[in-house]
Image 1 (spheres, rainbow over the protein chains, first blue to last red):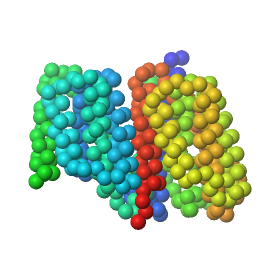
Image 2 (image 1 turned 180 degrees about the vertical axis):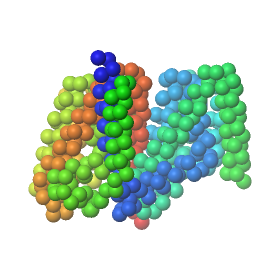
Image 3 (image 1 turned 90 degrees about the horizontal axis):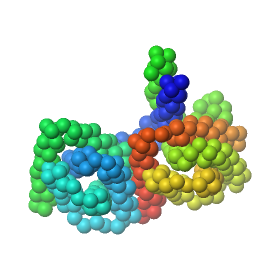
Image 4 (image 1 turned 45 degrees about the vertical axis):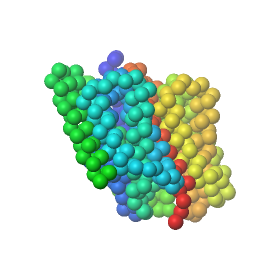
Length: 202
Length: 205
């Protein structure tokens, strides 16, 4: 009986998945540039090492902090990042965007390296502030002619995937050796942040 | 999972991948399948993220608020979509602001991410509003493209099926983590909605 219920639930979700994947921006893009928008949007967060490292650091830090931070930080980041993107799209300037992005890699990497455990509000605020810089950079660098919806879908999904990579990798936190590996990864991200910072202020 | 269940799951997964690989043809925001207006309408909803994402989000939101809210939303959304579609078709031009679908993405995503318990009445009201907005835009697009109004029946049918599946999925969730996954999905949709709002408001030129 229980097995039948489980099968039914799995079938429901698979059917929903089937419907969702049938919304094919890829096919539409052949005629209207929608896939160009999706692929451009998806490629944007993963094309810059500064973005990639900062977002993976969010996932790693969430995994170190455990519930509820492990899901709250990745929920916070895209929503606040969208505020930064919104500001860029409507023409509200944000000073020192590159420095902010570099600082995000430096500070978030340091949080992972030191296994910092501030309260949830502080952690959320820190992640949220940096998310604005990342979102603004995405909004400003939006290519002309890209499809707005599919570009947005692509770049939010890519951001979420990077967080997921961090959280999955952060699963190593349950082992003693894994904790050390995570902290060393944090050191590496912070060191890269220093390099980004130097490049931004030079 | 039993052997039969595994085979059935694998078949559906294969079908999903197959459908994902089928190239769609979009013409003036409407799909032409070559199978007639009803099938054009059926295909339009599942191949248009602007309509599919809000439909799925509303269904997930309703499902998270319980089976009763899901059932009400199922019929309310479909009926409102058809009513809005009829009104949009008769008017022949968009009768809702172009930013309205964007606002529905933002609102539905934010509500799902928040996962606050809503009464069935509120969920029904949201379903009616979303259905009227998206239906009206679809109806106007059908009229503007010189298509037959019967295509709206196809759209309504797809909205009904998609809502039924997604709401059932969400209502069946018992453990905490799958609900969290749905909330994360909601936050993504809210972020997409906010970006789209910026897109709508951005200075031209």
